[in-house]
Length: 259
Length: 259
DNA sequence: ACCTGAACACCGTTCAAGT
DNA sequence: ACCTGAACACCGTTCAAGT
Image 1 (cartoon, each protein chain N blue to C red):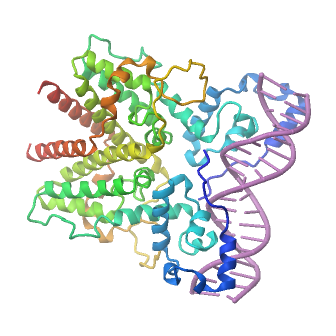
Image 2 (cartoon, chains in turn green, red, blue, brown; image 1 turned 180 degrees about the horizontal axis):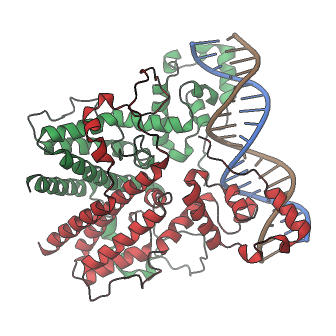
Image 3 (tube, chains in turn green, orange, cyan, yellow; image 1 turned 180 degrees about the vertical axis):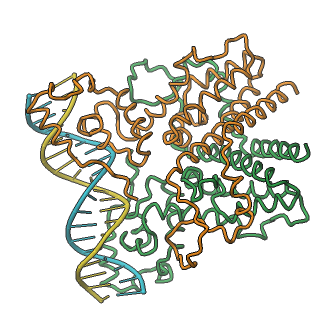
């Protein structure tokens, strides 16, 4: 359970070197260490979790990552919880930051809009599989605002786009719920699959069954159907499955809109 | 962010009383403190999380809850991580523990079986909304075994039941994926809704906009559609929505089976 | 204005020692 | 056999103090 292959607590040494030799001794120059800011701290936290996982994220480790003592972070974030919240917000904010990224105009239908939005959120989940569960799991600020669209701006956009395209108020809300629950389920599973890179190889060997409690190896002997379908179950058709399930959802919404 | 309204660290006092006055001084008698066991520890952890939330679960607190020092727990669980895994397993194991609970026999179709299973998992999520995210989020032991059916036995049962009812191998695997992603998305949203009991009341008041960074109050002034749909969005039709979405899924699976 | 040292109250975990 | 005391290396967070 040790997740710390860190090259020792030499932040103190770094500080001494900086003090003695001056900033010019840093081969990367001062441009590499712009002044602290909430945005920079949150971005560093996201990058850190991408590399080392959520449980490894610590105020102290993030501090040394930024070349600063952990205490300095408290000028910009109210605490670890606020930091996590900031990460969720910055992730979700990236959704609309590229309106040139193919965002359908008002000439196209709501289906094109939902396709665009779904793929945008999926890109977030795939780029940051270790961060995504945070989006899905933390309580929303507004109790009625369900994940994974944790941004008021995005939800506002979602609802007004659908209403402008012919949905009733009721239909838009129903569509929002169906859409977000669909996305949440799918992307959480995808992220979990990626997260299991450290998985132990399945050993169909026969070293006796003296395993009492440790050794979480998978023993398929008692599960014939799993053994039979193992290969099929491990196939990864995430892309195709996502497209198909998304189309099914859009079809269903369309039927409800017409009917 | 203080979640500790605990009545002080008086476990030491308890120990002294026990030692001085003997076990008979405990008004509840010794039957209240059966010997430690992995099962009992895990059950206590689930109950603890139900009451105080996942972040409050600590080896030390769980120890004092059981009238024991934290170090004693390490005889039965390999560490905090193993404890969490145990909680997931014990939760999932409760699914099949009541076969008299209406489990459809082989006379009934696969639809009845999936209905039964879906409602069983949903009951787990509703009874333990604070624990459920654990089931959904932790990596599965087998990389290809997706949540939320974190039990090999349950997945084996799922697949063999569907194959026995006419599904092809391929169809059963596809149904398993669609079903688990549906359940995961829906139940995680439901659990998150319940988890936001501490939500701040929406204050549509007008105290000036001098809020700079703190004060996570929801300000709907910039989001007209959210304001318009707020009431509708906060309506809770979880039961009806679940039934409807489940039926949609079953219909879809049926179409794929026939087609 | 921005960062840090030192301190506090907690953690998970190990292990020799008690009974 | 089962539990504990004491210790270790970490946490998050506060605050007076440095520059």
